[in-house]
Image (cartoon, rainbow, N blue to C red; front, side, top):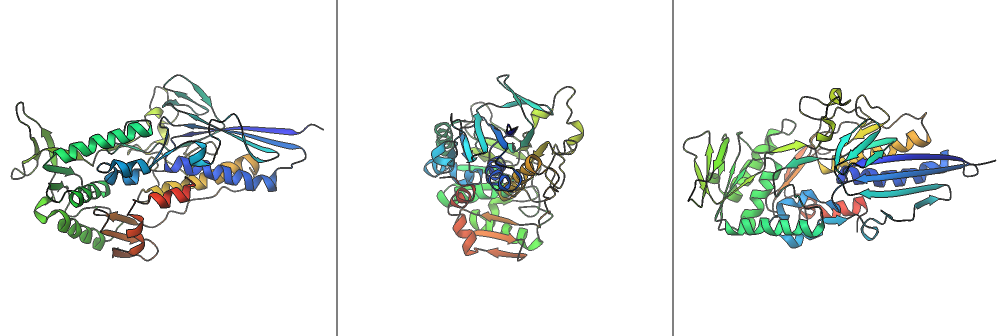
Length: 408
């Protein structure tokens, strides 16, 4: 009697925290679940996993506030997708043998997704990638240098060196935006260059304006930032209208909604602009129009599947409409669940898929990695300089994330 061969193609679009955690979860769950549901005497499972990701590796984007002023540190935040780093045979002629009857082939296609259709993707080089299951984990775009453009580790390091040069050459710096990124960038620059003028402009009365967090957290955070860069340099209730550099002038003028706050500086760092990386769903006759909300987020179900594409296409991270404070940890958490659910669909389709229970608010911020503030969902307390958080932020969670994702 010939063996029953099951073949499945899984496409991971984007391979940062959410995408890579999905990959690891798939490998773990296919290994464990196949022992229960796959008969080794008459069944063979072949899974082809394709990573559609233009970068050579994963960047710990949490560490960007430090990377832009410390290229040596930046180098430690880049994890190449090779066997030495991942312990997985990516782009190898050999399959990953999870058992005698389960073979997984992992391919890394270093291209951009140009269009996504319900059963295939088309890359920017016109390669067609068919799939049975797809995971979208493409994250957000930000202004440079916070969203590096380079696709290799060397290119990434060179960008961070260029960013460092711009910061070192500037005597006065304006940071626009008092969210997590802006606060950490301002704090790091002031810590490393205490003689520089660092101003932060924010449109609200307190920084880290997040409705889910208690007032104590935002007010204490505001005071900590003011202690770091100076109260006079923390411009609250102020909006930037535009920046301009007139011909013949070396300095930049930042024009705000307050006529008294027309600022001259050498460098402006924009930390407020971001957009979701889902342009590949926006094309004529796209089937995904009803799956995207007014904030340009993907509507997802409790099992992390995209609404309208249940049991087929999943999403994790910033691009989803999950009603939580978005974080790297949240993307990893959902990636783990997606890996479990796709495994169930392949090997145990009658089982109920795992559901995401929306977690409570939590946030940790550093003001130059020697001062932190955190609000932890389990204790529901605001803490300054929690020892565990301070330790994590010595490397912006680099070691912690590497250990949790199995990266060397």
